[in-house]
Length: 506
Image 1: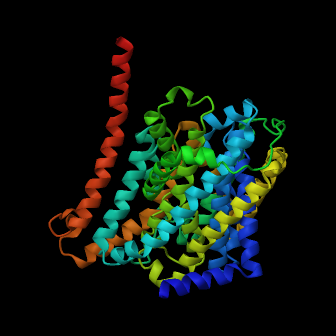
Image 2: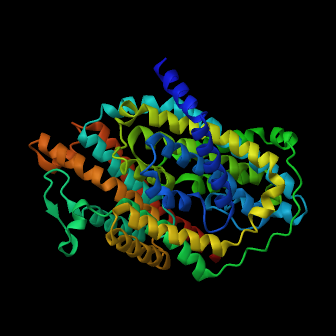
Image 3: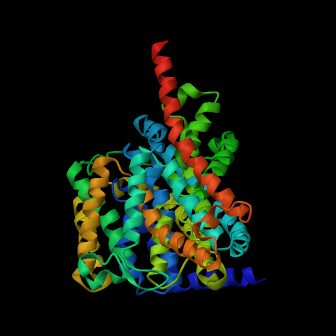
């Protein structure tokens, strides 16, 4: 009954004029920026972080979840019509979706993608509603050692499952741990690592400035540097939405398997939509009886990718809201938005802030319905979205990013931090260092430190208590799981390389 009351309260608030406007505008803005290559909903969310400080926490979360849902769904538009993914999550949608456009059938691909988005995100949010309270109730019983081990496991999993060189990911993790330690000691409140002796750094690096530099400003600078011209590339006529009943029925088991894959991958820290879509596409292609048609216009490829990446949204909400562990980049931004409101996300979050939790759930469900209505009724407008002059948007975003960095601290300190992380982000990109392990470690390392310090204060055995598996079996499980994922992530490329060498020799 209590859950129903919170759910209905959130629904009532979002059905008010103000709440409805937030959901609709957030969803449509997410679709537009998700469709445009190089921007994406994450950029918009980061730019809005300083503004969200002046909003109520419930409305800020409703806006952010709407942008997330809209952005994930909008990514398929660029993939299908341009052959350029609007978001990383829609990368594999290009393989088959763009083939339909080249064959003169963009509406079929878009209709399937739009409905797959709905089938992916709404059931996964319902799954999150069903699971979050149980997971949070279990997490409340964890002690400091168990919670420290959970954070430790999440960081190791992000590194082990990240793309590219694991050594470079570890470099990002090391930098994040150092930068997160700047400012006051979280236990004794004594100053440590006060850069240049400036008192502005006593509170640590401002999270809004960090994210504005590392996400928004960096992305725009890199887009300018690459000079990709896609503005006038769309010369396609799109017919209206046609309900793809036949395609969905013929691929019903594929959609179900893809949804399960997406929800599970979304639950794991640091993976999210991009990995979910790639894994689902690869799995379905492997078991398909028409492997030779995949990549040449097979509707199963579109359904697998779009169902999985949207299902990852609900999966990622479970560790985010129940444990305070972000599942993807959007989760990091949710934590940042709540932190600047003075709200800490963790096992007690559902008990202390249930109205915010259910606002996120209801906002996600309403946004899923809004995006379905817009994309079915307004499908003919999709080519127009891709003809928006990108250089105007890029200029506006980078200007808003630096204005937001200044607003977040009311001083040039925020601007300097944003500029530093913008340069750092560009260097990361140049040297192949993934940003997500850095960002998630920057968010999680304070929680890791606080819980280790608390555990040490409760025990006479010091840090050795952390590895006392007999007394803390749950922490042992998390530590072993994290190390196992790290080891698998390290050796799997070696096995793949050995297999390729043997194949080449034969």
